[in-house]
Each structure stands twice: as structure tokens, then as C-alpha cells.
Image 1 (tube, helix red, strand yellow):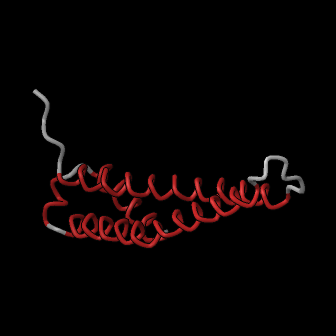
Image 2 (cartoon, rainbow, N blue to C red; image 1 turned 90 degrees about the horizontal axis):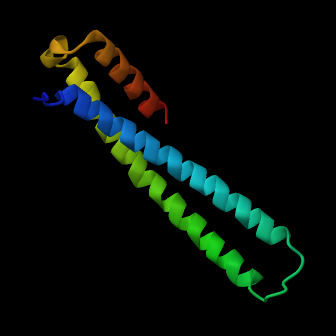
Length: 112
């Protein structure tokens, strides 16, 4: 029979997932900006779609950038919940390694 994950494990996992999501969006934004630079540097427009492609890429970049503020808020909220849990009396019952990992994760989340 498997034991239920602790509240610390659940909160830690939540912050890790959100940080990973944020990292993924940052990588996607970098790729989109790279594609846009490449499109803007092209001099030929053989198929007549260059302008449309540039507009589409700019829109995709704007949509990706719009994700960051609400996502950052979610990261900070989840990190705050984790930090509160670490400050509570419950923290004494958790494994020291788990607590240390959670503290490091809170710091990473706050650093952005």
C-alpha cells in the first residue's frame, strides 16, 4: 500500500511544476524571437507569405509574453504557500532533506 504524499511534497511539486512551465515559456519565447529575426532578415518573398508570417510570429510572441505576468503570480503564490508550510509547526515532521529542498525552491521562485 502506498502512502499519501505529504503536504510538503505536494506543495513542493506544485512550485516545481510552475517553475518548469515558466522555463518552457521562456524557451518558447526565445525560439519565437529567433524565428522572427530570421523572417525579418529574409530578402526574398518567393511565396508571398513573408509579411503574413512576420505578423503571425509577432502575434505569437505577444501571446507568449502575456502568459508571464499571471504565471509569475501563480509561482509566487505557490511559493508563498510552501514558505508558510515551512514556517508552520508541521515543518518539524518532515524530512530535513525535503525541507532543505523546499527552501531552495522557494528562493528560486522568488528570484524569478
